[in-house]
Length: 431
Image 1: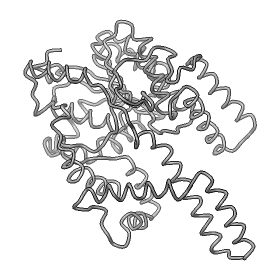
Image 2: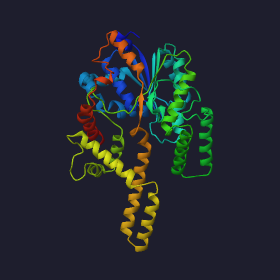
Image 3: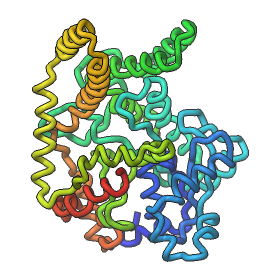
Image 4: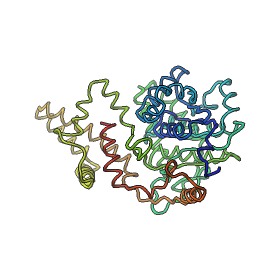
């Protein structure tokens, strides 16, 4: 690539983006269209039953977001026509071979695509094993195989996660995973065998005619069990690590870049500071049920504000509540609660009994979240970013336009970002 003309590189190119309704993919699409309007075509792969449903998702979950307001202001009345010309939404699924596309779709896309960017993933830490394997692991293989058949393919970018490293401490290298490699040295990791195990387990559970909720919980448990067996803390990072293994195995001579982002926050500068989404979708569902006021009140408390002029205040609150949960409620909390409930039952205090039951339910949810996020809240690793440093150096030597493509984290004032951009954006978009 000619570093002094990255925008020119994108000119007249056709790009396939999977996982197009996700947070990172949306930001990517907006950026490409804003800095290089002469891109030829963006194929956006969207999970949907048909083309019409895919288009509805595109309008509601991508183009309809505030993220695109800068482009809308820039293009004015030409916005819809421009998007119609540049974007072709495709109903498909990365977890299927050939991405679930028809032969007609594949023929046209094979002949025109220059770049493939695989962002498709399920990011739930405790996703059910069959779903996570399908998207995060086998989906990576399907995308690589699809990219290799494209006549003019120049690049495949596969978005993984930095936390495929598990809970390692110290310096963490940028080395790729060999097929079957595990974090704890346990041998026998076979992706085909894992797929068969997930399929067989699901089949057995369905044969027992169990409720769907119970099947879902059992498949989630299976994923976490298999992850921890080989040294990963949860299903998400385990299946993403196996996805990287398959990318390495099937890439052949295909030019591949594996990106490993860490925790994703709100936008810092482009297209405007502080855009984020995530829990907002759940809030929208709550809104439709008429519970927005209660949710907001619960967050803010008695009319108070979530924002403080001292970011240290927020930090101290987080630490206080975190330590409080871990110290007040030990591992045997259920035994204590059972004794209290037994006492209350004998006393006939039904209201208090209901309160304690509700409290225990909420406590279990909180403790589950603590367990899920603990590997990242208390992460002790340091990521080696030599490749990124070399890329920045080379790009600058070749005239990189840093106003348009600045990816140097050393220029970020983190205190200012969190206090003045990120936390206000959380309040705005999530609450």
